[in-house]
Amino acid sequence: MDWQELLFGDESANFLLEIALRSVIMFLLIFLGLRVAGRRGVRQLSIFELLIIISLGSAAGDPMIYKEIGVINSLVAFAVVFFVYWLITKLVENSDKMENILEGEPMYIIRDGRVSKEALKNKVLAGDEFFASLRFHSFSHMGQVKAAILETSGEVSILPFDDAEVRPGLPVWPDQLHKMYKVIPHEGVYACFKCGSTKLIAKDERTECTFCKKNDLWVEAVSDAKKQLV
Image 1 (cartoon, rainbow, N blue to C red):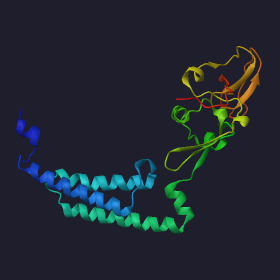
Image 2 (cartoon, rainbow, N blue to C red):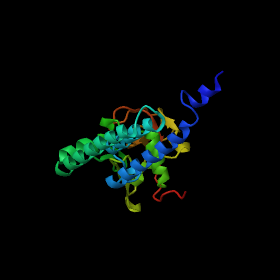
Image 3 (cartoon, helix red, strand yellow):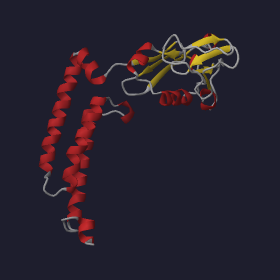
Image 4 (tube, helix red, strand yellow):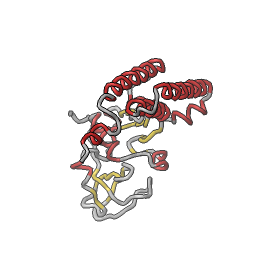
């Protein structure tokens, strides 16, 4: 086994110092570029802005470790990326249509305690991830949620019902959520496992949800008004 080739490739150990210098230069270029562009937190990045970050990372990575790729080559790539970013930013500022194309639009995923028809149609709701978001905000069931919006950043904004307005809803805690029935064990209010729509169902009855029309699994609804303490 050739340890020299394994550890250093085709270059000598002296090239390590050059790699360190190249890395510092590229790091500073990315940092200065993002400062000029006024970058926000990673959780707030849109798809377009994330694409810019990936492009910069790609342009910066190769010159750090490949001797045959000069730093000037990367500077040209940086200039093009930031010019495209500036150009598209100007288009977004002057066109709502362009903004919607690049940034996306917020979408209601819950309305009045159940999954919205928009979310069902576009299949944007990942159940486990959304339930985790509700639990994180101390909700115990969907009947406490008046509205929830999936923002363009990927975050979920939640508007709760007042305590007096809370209705029975689909539980979001695993020990309750996973108790599903096709044949109802006793009469009561049950929530559709797919969309959270509630219904009074008789004992031994089997029924399909009339709202989403894609589910015959039901979970006993929870009616607690106050949020869980976590």
